[in-house]
Length: 257
Image (cartoon, rainbow, N blue to C red; front, side, top):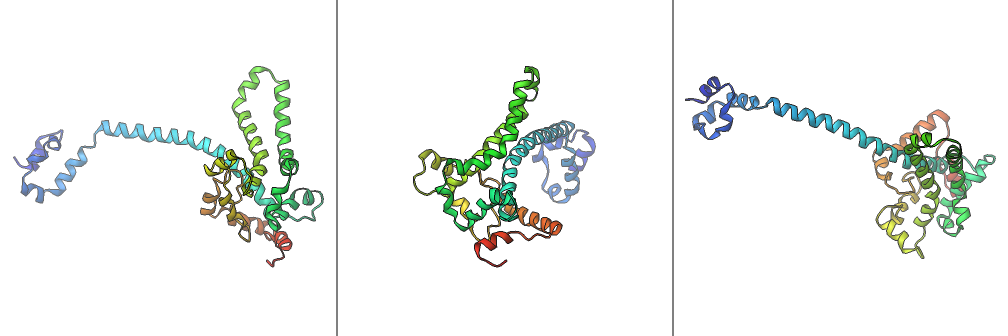
């Protein structure tokens, strides 16, 4: 019986289970037919398994992506706020300039100044940013019934964790500039990259200070650098507003644009 006869006479392609029965001549002359037999081994059961795997992958990927996006948002919100104040605006802007932009300009002129700030100066601005969210949560917990509180518990946990990490951002940033006298547990968190490592943050302070704006964990710095996120954002803002990035920063650094 030849290989082609087996294909013709066997509806279930049983030759797949008897590959040793193929003769030498058949192995060299019936390649196309053998390919068809192998293709016929793609069973309905295999198809069902693959469908299950593809659907399961899609569902699980959406679930994981959802939580990753939540965490991405956590880091990205902080980094965008930092990048905006670091890149745009001027110290001369009423109220906002002296209150919020001035510390960023000071930090580039004297990066170690932050290490001499006490706990109030280090964290005051960030605490102020989170107050609206914390006031809102507090009001809701004091006025809503238990059922309503439980219904929004997951969202509230996210908002609260966001507020906590925004509040801690500048303290973590300060630690990334502190090379002496750090508590051992802070050094370990830096070494384990749970919070911003000291060596990692040095990249941001290479003139013209145009990258690595994430200063809480630093986890998003490399991915955002890889996709050219910040240059693209700066280009869009400059085209829309006409404002050149870092113009005020260059002025305080005594550099030309």
